Image (cartoon, rainbow, N blue to C red; front, side):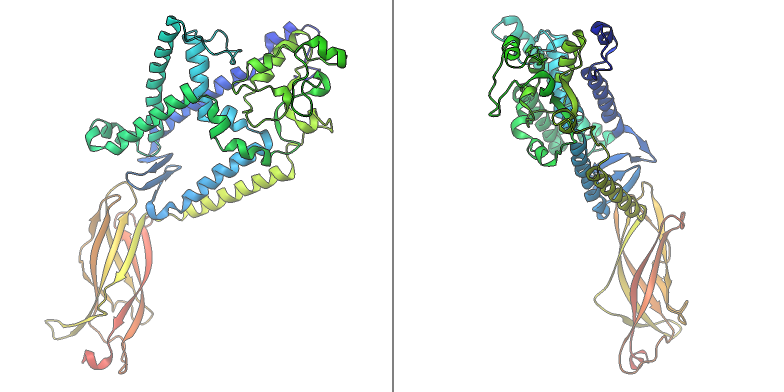
Length: 480
């Protein structure tokens, strides 16, 4: 809240002010709804995002990719991590405070269940004081909160699994738990973790377990925006050794008569990770901006701007001018993200709707005679063909021979198209033959390069692949 925004009547301003906490609640609601809806969205049987461990498929933007096409997965991971790093450079640990499931789940349990629904905590603004569980009433309420959160954990676990097992399959599998013990065990394991994490481990997960807090200081620079206390206006509460010097306003004013901090410690009691923002940058801070809200409400009532701002060290601490948001480092991250996305889209656009692997059998050829007395040279191949689409297709193929041999290398078997079901690898023995003299070489066999054009009979435009192979023709004396 800037000086210009604060009118002489602080209460008038506060009546129109929307706390960051409320904005976060709305954002959490949108995120929750989207996470529950996305797994159910399908177009032509393909999901918006699905990494199916069951069927070894990747669905991305309603396009289905087979296991052999998982080369796109590293690009998704690169986009995720580079994006998080870029967000950290720009806005600090805003991911932790606004997007991280750990934070969202803690808000649901602490603010909604414990405070609003059951009244175990007296005020949302006081997160330091734990409920008194010595009272029978509070013990019962805690059991109720435990049961409610356990039920919500099952929903969260199921929702997570829907991104790896399609919801339609998940609901069918879960009805036969004895046949899907891995799935059931995974869901129960997630539920146990969520119950322990949210109810017992709490914010200690962010402080001691999550590795993200350890790398944030490496990514920060002077223009990174974060929840930051302004000691130039409020006064120094801690010394250079991070030892607290003042607990009362009169003591602070005796040293610094211009200090505006009231030492009410509203910014301390509201902090979910139990830190004092006035101490400076700390790895425990998750940028939830609760301290900004607390100070805004106190200082706003006095007609002054908040001493805790969502700002940068450059602007608030060092007072070297405005924060530069679009700086070279941020432009670099944006360029890398765009480049990675473009490469992924280009590679994804080359997706083949049919996977075909051709292996020539060990025997180079066989020499046979037809009923008409002609010599016939057979070459046998093994086709491994997979239909990556979501519906059945009938497949066949053509042989493209070199110039001068067109139509002389023919298909022996099969003589009819064959059906391949979605996701099934079809093994087919193919025989090509020639009953004419292709090459007259008296010294050695001749290897003729050919192209196999395989296609779906009902959609040659969309489903067609070309594979290079060879046809071996024996030396002249063997053909005689």
